Image (cartoon, rainbow, N blue to C red; front, side):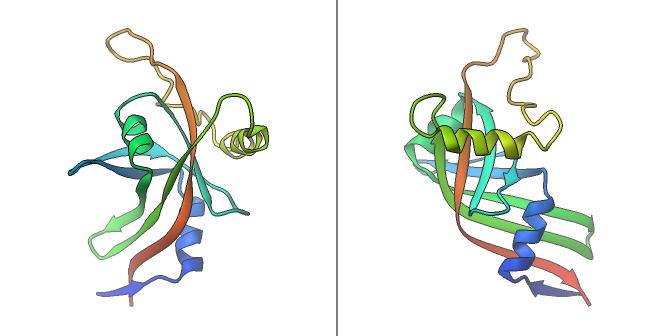
Length: 148
């Protein structure tokens, strides 16, 4: 088995097809990783996402440096993984930035039920809090894949 380094175009292609990834953020010396729904902007260097106010949003507000991992694993010998390094940018619910909100809604709306699980009801019966729309400005991507 050979492991190949992927080009930027190959990384972008993998991320463009992904609906989910794992978002990593850090508070102090404690890392945190969580699965999230994502959508890559085909024209701009952004990943868009949706959440409710909670630990990851609080941590990203305090330290906007994040990364997102996207993978396709068929077997131990057939896999692709891409890491997107970037900066969290919260999209305000009102005021300036209407164009950004409109772009986010347009892109996220291409995926069925894009708002899940962020806005789903918790098993405890309580409702989630304030919805948060965000984007990650992509700084760089790196990827590896297996092949012959």
